[in-house]
Image 1 (cartoon, rainbow, N blue to C red):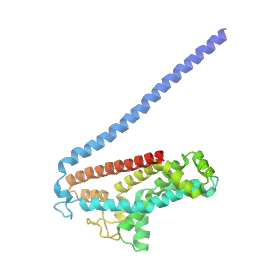
Image 2: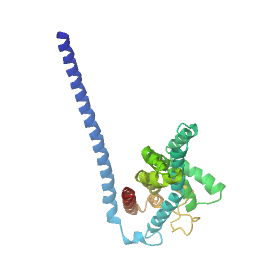
Image 3: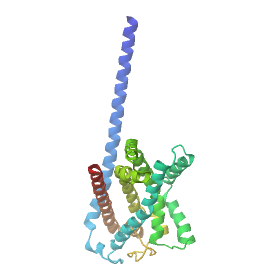
Image 4: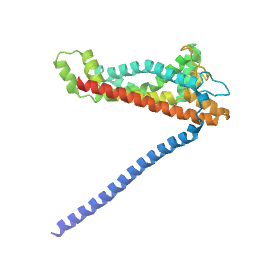
Length: 292
């Protein structure tokens, strides 16, 4: 009887210690989440407070000069860069993910090698991509400092993000969907494009949104590949500057600090607008898939 009481007492003591430890970990997790949230709020509020008073009509002039410090050419070039980069990276990334998940054997060592390479590429600093683009695209291929050089460089940068998120989205689709389509007589390709891809569209769009965010905020790689010319690109072979490069350039001069903060506000709004539009598209595609 005494042994049983001692055992019960020890179990209660251990349970109390576990409860205290769980409570401590719970408080730490929420504290870290609160600190992250406050950091984001502080950064956004600081940018808005410093930038909103300096947003003037001159900043949206079509041509840039030293008096208006217009951001309009950089804004248009940023949109060009997003569209061209996605046109290059999205088909390659989604196609590669489809091969890895739907066609290649899952125990294939080449698949493991590709995944390791994608994870490694996602951790390489952007300045390395910029040097690669400068040496290979600008110099060796003679593309020069141009929109297409910057877009190809950024496409290589965002490929790991698109491949990994698309692969996870495709793997999350239940195998019952594929088996049901095969049982009804659908072929492999038809099953992928009619069943699997629509079901994974929300996850794929999440990766595309992350890629867009990196395109908008990238500056180091584009300085070496796209240049810093403050003009609207006339073709894909024209030298350009995006909003991030525009901010870096005018802040480095030390004369346009207020315009730099104003440009940061526009850059922040652009990210929010792109995320909102992407969310609407993903929601509409998801609802259409559910109706079908």
